[in-house]
Amino acid sequence: MGLRVYTGGTFDLFHSGHVNFLMLCAEIGSVTVALNTDEFIESYKGKPPVIGYKDRADVLKACKYVKEVIPNSGGMDSKPSILEAAPNVVAIGSDWARRDYYKQMQFTQDWLDEKGISLLYIPYYPSISSSEVKRRLQVN
Image (cartoon, rainbow, N blue to C red; front, side, top):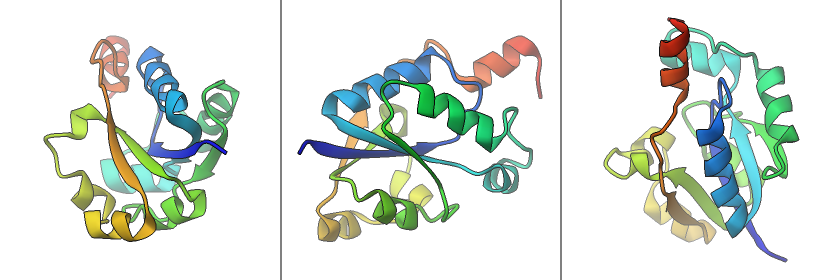
């Protein structure tokens, strides 16, 4: 059995940057995406996503690089979703390398070590982002 890879996010306005990230995750193992709920996004960002949860989940499920989509049930605390996915690897974009991902996700390296989970930074290619798509569409 191969590695199980966990990643999470909003995946609003799905674009090639998302596809490239998920493709790189799939090269490591079977990918489970913990998808942020509409309620969490609105409470965190102060506004709802452009695309609702069901539609964002449907798009992710249709992506050949994604095995499973689960709701990010813990909101700011990603531990419940990580435990549900039971991964060997938590994968994040390298754009997080200079930010406090541990604080953002509310876990520690010790917690990951206790669970036998590695944290892996996937190269981030800033050619496109949901923020850039919104800017181009003049969506606020």
